[in-house]
Amino acid sequence: MENKTIKGRVLFVGQAYYNAWYLSRELRKIGWKADLLNFDSSKKNQMYYHGEDYKFEYKNLIDIYSQIYFYIDSLNKYDIFHFSNAHGLFFLNFLDYKPKTKVSKSRLISHQLLVGLVVFFIKFIPVRIITKKLSEIGSKKIFDFLEKYYYCIPYRWDIILLKRLGKKIVYSNNGCLDGVSQTSFSKWGPESVCNICRWKNEPTVCSDKRNLEWGKIRNELADYQCLLGGNRVDYNISSKIHEVPQFYCLDPQFWKPNLIIPSKYRLDMKKDVIKIYHAVGNFKERTGENNINIKCTHIYLPLIEKLRKEGYQIELVSPIDVPNKVVRYYQAQSDICVDMLTFGWFGGNIREAMMLGKPCVCYLRPEWLESVKKEIPGYIEELPVISATPNTIYSVLKDLIEHPEKRKKIGQKSREFALKWHSSQSAARRFDIIYSSLLN
Image 1 (cartoon, rainbow, N blue to C red):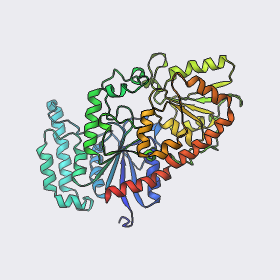
Image 2: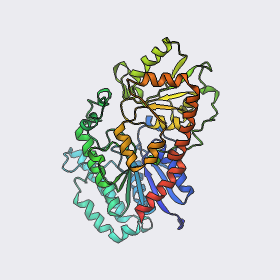
Image 3: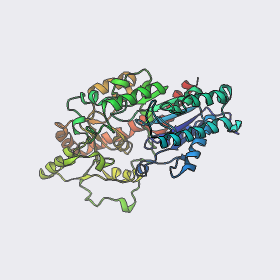
Image 4: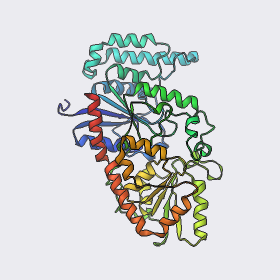
């Protein structure tokens, strides 16, 4: 029997790096039932995750049956379902056909069998794992709902059903293509980010049509959306979308300034060498010719060489395909963390480095700073990240290299800022309010 004193019940459906994992752990400490489901079938992506309560497998039909059972069981166990990442607002995707999509006869038969299986579970599953709301609606109505779309279930039927049962849907935005067309995003200046992006001419990854179709369905399904970065164009202009830096959280004990470095991860560099950290997740997939990518590796590599020729003792720390739990050891040994110079905001690399007490550099777009400031002014006023562009990064980096005390002072502010805005504890406090408001 479940504890009746809990504040609420939330299931994080899908990973968001490690953010949802640490948030769920802290929510448990303050009275929430909070679990995380990992439905990612990619083996490579697992290196970015830190934990899970449940995991979907995709080996055979038994795994599909298990997924259906888990989905229906969750209707009884949770009130809020929190999703993350572009095109990641789904629970079950094996029945994922858009309306009027033409399919082969063999695939249609398989599709019908799976629909029948879903109907069977909903019609005959024991009452003990059906929610009160589901019982009120009645299995016949749900059967009729599925039967009506027997040949082609509506897109995101699994989320539509959650909403019809009164469940709350929360979504966390992640990335430039999340609800914003390539055309709109490319207009942000002073330099177009899209021109150096590996995915500019890959419509299966990023295109106006794909991005906007996703934004439309995302806004229709989600009750509350989290964003950080202020990219308010296209479908990111919505009263449902809020600047919530706390979702993108970290465990301050996992990332701490006095982190003990295992011997096998210690950098073989002289103590007086300034170590500059610059990393790109999935480097090969995201990088084009001449090291061009949105992380600006093509700018940093020649810049490092230029500074070396000028006599500065510096080394680049740039791990590739290293599990996220290990990356922190390289970040902790670095003196400065540098990131994107045209995108306009920062991501996990900078947040991790700030939590480790490092000075961080990337481009902060003035328009986005103002947008975020309107909703959470304190965040922008306290933000210690140093803004730089391709034209100013030389002088910014040179200044930090020459002034160790300045690096130390900014690093201290970085840790304080990360604890206040990006710690898992602050995230739990914020979402205690957000989730409670949704339920009430």
